[in-house]
Image (cartoon, rainbow, N blue to C red; front, top):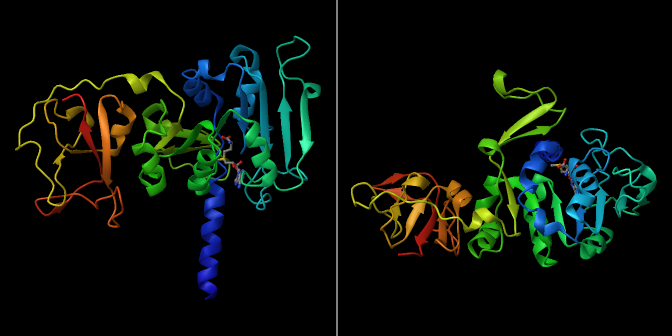
Length: 325
Ligand SMILES: C[S@@+](CC[C@H](N)C(=O)[O-])C[C@H]1O[C@@H](n2cnc3c(N)ncnc32)[C@H](O)[C@@H]1O
């Protein structure tokens, strides 16, 4: 029994640690340059962001005028594990409101930034934080990985636009996949080679020497999720391969052909096709329809279980159909 609770504590400590990865400014700039038109006249909320360390706050404060923002709100979470992992070491959680540069020096001065105390811990699910969320048009942040499902569910509940960072593993979560299938959320432009370097001093980086950066942790499979319209979502994937039953065998357990590489989707097949999950990076809903996924042993409404070809289990797949045929 003791061992169990010790394991549980270690597990949540590990997750809390993973929640303390800070995003670099160039990565934020690289993604958000594709969304500029969406921000004019809007209130942006960064609800998992200590303004002293958050580059999301920096990005929006410094680009307030060029983006034509109406207001920037940022809440800082007072983590219960503050001593261990977090840099959120203020006495209590705070929130901050910024209405732009008043003295024309083009930088957000301390007196222009209204810092107010929160009575609670600044949890994004708290009443206070939800009250601020209601004022917001667009939420932009890197939320705690361990609470991703809940985080997205709340954004959907309050019908908010968002651009947020998450792990590609969450694509296959039942709740998230349903939203992707229904074209309610999609992938943004992404990190170089789907790999992010986050600022984190608590980890010894496992990146190879060439890739190693001091005080940083390299995490692969990191993606941006959004529900703001972006150009890439309207670009067709160019298809060049022709279907042959030999090259594209059917699954034993679902009536679909197997496609090992997204770029090898046959141009002339009009039935269901199983493609790698990374297909979503190229997904244009005018070109393809998402039918379901084959990702785990537990089956649900849209998950038909791991795919098998001639008795052999293969990698997880997303099931799609070409709408243009
Ligand atoms: C992955 S970090 C990213 C921090 C920052 N958004 C950035 O990108 O640099 C997630 C942040 O969420 C905070 N956090 C953890 N649980 C939270 C909660 N329940 N409500 C609000 N913030 C939380 C953590 O303290 C951490 O600062």
